[in-house]
Length: 110
Image 1: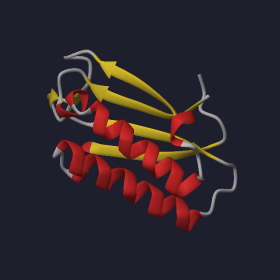
Image 2: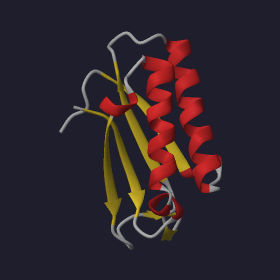
Image 3: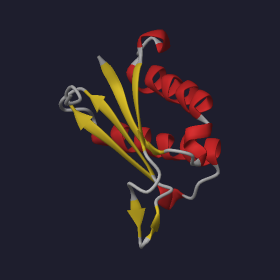
Image 4: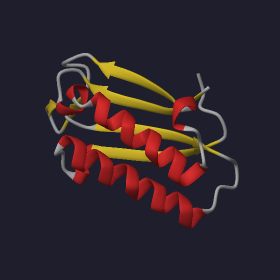
């Protein structure tokens, strides 16, 4: 089962930084959920160039969704989401406005 689903733009910086992003997401899974990093599933979806737009320009944004247990503590959820955004900004050099992170209660939908 995937714990993360990441939607990125083909050819953008995140697409070129998959390795450090995966390592960081696995570290955060261990830190916030106690997951064994080797068991953390990450599903990557690359939007082809020209498929996503923001304000009339090709999008440079990424979306990260993490499944968490139903009833996950709100304070912990906020700290986790901030850590995901910080990881993304550090690994890719994107602005905070180019990363959307959410923690989805329960398993990720197919």
